[in-house]
Each structure stands twice: as structure tokens, then as C-alpha cells.
Length: 558
Image (cartoon, rainbow, N blue to C red):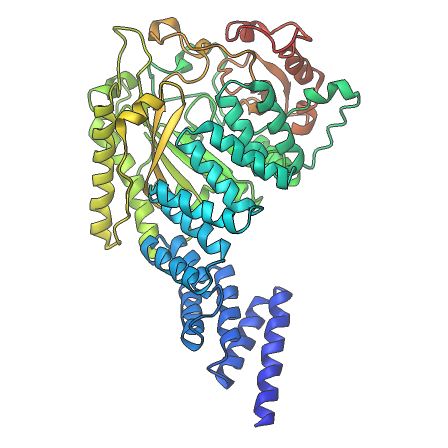
């Protein structure tokens, strides 16, 4: 008997040691040997479940946690871990049940409350989500995760002041929290407080970047770049001629970025954490690049997260599965004009409406197939639709009322629901939207998004959100509120197809050129004299660039 116990303990201890040392396969073997000797040993099942969860073997991990609860029904965190896996698999109702079971066992489990809030939030159950986050905070006032999630919730429903208060609470607990700094920067930028926006973006960059900016003088500290958005223009060519886009107004040459230059940029980004991800978009349609597959493969090999913005014209059956395997950020599918009638303002592109809309349906179908197979999903799909509620009389309209928004949301919800049934997926609980509130909010804010399924959103995006200078007068947009100064030279970094660098993602003609990355590093261009001068102009320390003069009213300081 003692010999059997000794053998069991030897195998269990070897399993734990290998687990800690990340020798996962050896650890799995020893856990299984321990279980063979003692099939009722709870910790063996639980530890093995944690390991299998970590290596994304979800099916076997579920089995282990269920056996954990069978041997010891009240085992702490087993239900919570089960809930996390079910949530990852898109089985929201099972996840909710698990989290509630965990809370029944341990009413002080802040992680269970927080995780429950995340599920409710993604299902559009805002009140339940808020209650769950608040309960976690009530138990532990310094629980950063719940504060961050509550802040994001408030931001998404446009309760801006509450969102700011939550993020500021996070920074009181952890002043270097990069996510809170980044999100606060985003909020302040949205409400026009550009000084605070830049300050928070800069703090976010400092906390995540390995760049040594070597600013020198204390008074120059405010001129540090705070690059939060990195746009990589694979090409400025586009196969559409949309009335709402300045693509046809470009005076610069058209071309494609060399693969060697793309690799050079990715090499540096992988070494120095300059940005969180790279958005393969500026002007042009990135999927037209003849080496796109090679570019995405190289980004993946270097662990560089990339997002892709596309007009959807090339989302054909051969391409979509490859994209879904390669993208690790967002796929923004710019449907923009969601009806056959409004599609006319995209120009005569030689692609029928029926074929075009089928491309977007294909994207959704392939995504749902991945969910049904239990495939690993590293991306988020955003179906973007334009709402034209701030244009002059006589202008071409797209979605122009709350009724239009509701009809569009219902159409895509119905398509997702139908596809779920065809694939045998359990129905996803989609939120009931207040279309009138959405329409009203878009008068002041850039976008409102709603979950159609796990990792897929429909986004209603206000037309002409950015700078008036980007779109010509004949497009009949209403004048927008001018900011005190522009944050883009601090927050944006765009590399054009020829290697030229612009510190503004709205600079469609590349006039704000501050260097070229063919013969210089990204770091060197960010730190260049020209970059610093452009940022200084926003503080009234240098003359504003002619392009900037068309776009804004005055510098931040005299």
C-alpha cells in the first residue's frame, strides 16, 4: 500500500515540476500516471485541466475540470475555469451557469463575478454586466480587471465621465497601467481634450515600448511621440471610386510596397514594441497587393499582430479562409453602403451588388464554420456600415434614420441566425438595440458596435468623422467642430507604399512627410527633427504645416 502511495506521489510531484518548467508533454504523462494509480485524486485532475487549457486542448480540459468537480463538488475555481473555456468556445449559456455555480460555492470569487460580467457584456446584457463588475469591485476595490471592464462598458454606451472615472481609478492603483492610459487617451481624443489625450497616449507608449527616445531637455518632454496607431499602406491603388473617399484625388504616384521593405518594418516592430498592432490600411485596397499572403505569413512568423481594412471586393471563396488564418487583429470589412441603391456611390467597379454582398456573407459563414469546428480564433471581424446623418441637403445618403439602422441590424442578425442553424450551432444571444439612441449618439461619436456572434460585430460608423480636409467640398458634408489642435502627429504613424512616413492617417496625399524608412529605422523617423517640428507646431512652437492649417483652428498654446 505504501509502495503504491510512494509511486503515486513520485509521479504527481514529477508532473508538478515539469508543469512549472513548461515541459508540458512530460507533465501530462506524469499527471495521467498519477490518475491511473489514484482515480479520485482531485488535484491531479485540476492541474491537468489547467495545463490542457493553457495549450488550448479545450475538450480534454473540460473533461478534467468536470472530473475535478465529480471527485470534489466544491473545488475552488474549477467551475470558474470551466466557464472560461465555454466562453472561449462561444457557449455563453454554459459559461454563465459555470460562473454562477462558482459564486454559489465561493461568494467572494472576484474572478467569477468579473468573468460573468464579460459574458453578459458580450451578450448585450449591459445592466447585468455592470452589476457583476460592480460586485467584483465591492469585494475588492483594487481589482483592476473589473475597473477596466466597467470603464470599457461605460465608454461603449457613451457614458464618458463614468468611463474616465473608472480608468482614473485604475491609474491610482497602477499608474503605469498601459491599457488604462491607452483607453483614456482614446476617450480624451474623442471628446476633444487633446492635451490629456496625448499625455495618456505617451504614457501608454512608454510603458510598452523598448524605444529610448532620448528627449533631453525637460521642456521637450511633451514633444515625445505617443504612437498608438500604426498604418502600413501596402498600396494606394483602389478598385473602387467611392464618393465619400478622396482616393481619386491623390496626386502622388500609385504603387505597391516592396516585400523586402515590409519585412524590414516587421523585423523592427517585433524587436521594439512600438505599437500594439499594425493596420494594413491607409489609402488604397490592401488585398490588391500581389504578395499579401507572404506579408501576412511573415507578420505571423514575427508575432506582429496585424489588422486589415478592406472594401470587401476580393473576399472570394479562395481567399477568405487564408485571411482568417493569418489575421491576428481586426478584419474591418467596409460594407459602408448596405443596399443595392446606396451601392451606386461606390462607383462602377464591374462587380454586381449580389456578388458584392455575397462576399460579406461568405466572410461570416467561414467564421461561423471555424466556431462550429472549435478552431482557434485570433481575430475580430467588424462589418462597418456608414450612417450619413450629418451631410448637406441634396447630398447622397446611406443610412439616414434610426429606422434604417434597425432594418440593417435586423437583416444581418437574421443572416447570422440562419447560418447558425445550418451549421448546427447553438443560437448566440444578440442584443436588442435602441436604434434611435444609436442614431442620436452618432451625431457626436464616431461609431456604435453590436455583437452579432462571438468575435464578430456590426458597426454603425458616422460618415466623415475625421477631418474636413480629407473629403472634397462636392461631397456635401456638414462642417464639423474643429479641435483646439490635432493629436495625429503624436498618435499616428503611417508608412506609405514607397517608404515615406506621415504622422497623420488622414494625410491622403503624403504631404506631411517626416522621413523614409527605406534607409532609416522606424525609431529614427519617430525621433527625427521633422517629426519633432510637426509635433511642436501643435503647441504653437513652430509654424503649422499648410495641410494642418486647412484642418484645424489654432495650436494648443500661445
